[in-house]
Image (cartoon, rainbow, N blue to C red; front, side):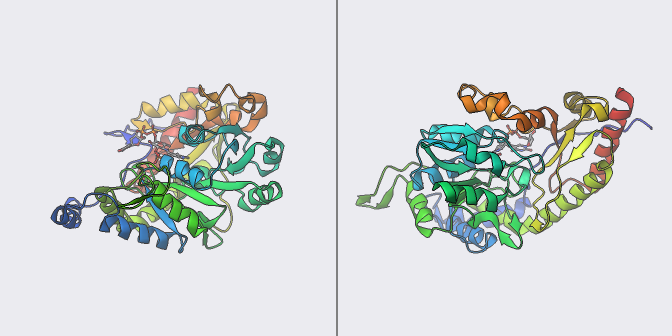
Length: 380
Ligand code: T4K
């Protein structure tokens, strides 16, 4: 096989969607004219309503980040004690639990989608457990029916970390209304973004109302502060970026889907490369393109492939290694023991997320597959 040609400029794991600059200026003009920059401005309120449309009418409250969405959802539900979660996630998930004064208790994942294993959750429940925080990691929906059945048996709340789940639907229904709440991230690296930002969605309208107060110090009006809130508001500039992003989201998702299809077609049969199975009945959002590099089949391990791709100017990422259970502040807990998390430990050593974003051309995805094939063939 001929040595593939490197990309002239770096290809990152993701690239945020940027609207046309003149269009952005046009949409920003009303903000300049009104000088209303934050605190429930008109752009903010418009985006909040648009997001409720995306999640099929589930009530939604915009916040300043996905991390704030988790923390405010926990506060709105008055969670305490222990919270069962996955170690294969961004630090934000476990950190948000800890910053809320709770103990993250790690439970292993299942290998099909790399989400929390419902069968293992039950063993982690103690009298101190108040909730389960599953993550729709890589945009793969969790096994929600099974998880919610465990929660119902033990009287636990379920807060989904939906940072990767924008526009994700199962059997035609948005995942936003599942459990007691979902926490979305609208960070620049996400499928849909507002530069920074996030949202709490919940089928319980009172939970969303509480988040709306919590994000603004608990202020009800000029004379009334209901409780101890915080500043977790999205501002008008971010809201405009979000509104502009929504104008292009369908095409962004379609292009991600086209590249995902190229990767799947080209890599499915490659020895030593494993893909997550596409679940039936799911409207995917193609948030990430995780592959597993099995050294025995591929010839070299994940880290060597990672470095090999860098040699071609391709900057894949090993999300989510380190596992949260390896991090100081979390690794001391008994549930963080590798023997408790065998599948997550395995995945963390093999996973590599390939570039996937709306501006990636199918041709580029093909070139990245050529590079992976070449690295595998020549490295042995
Ligand atoms: N739950 C889960 C499961 C999450 O994944 C996250 C966030 C959260 C909760 C919390 O949500 P937020 O509070 O962040 O809203 C990134 C993001 O910073 C983080 O939001 C995200 N997860 C995590 C998975 O990824 P890094 O450290 O990998 O980002 P960084 O700066 O290395 O960016 C990755 C690549 O993206 C760069 O190589 C180039 C490209 N990029 C990035 C940014 C920020 C751009 O092209 N432009 C940009 O502005 O954490």
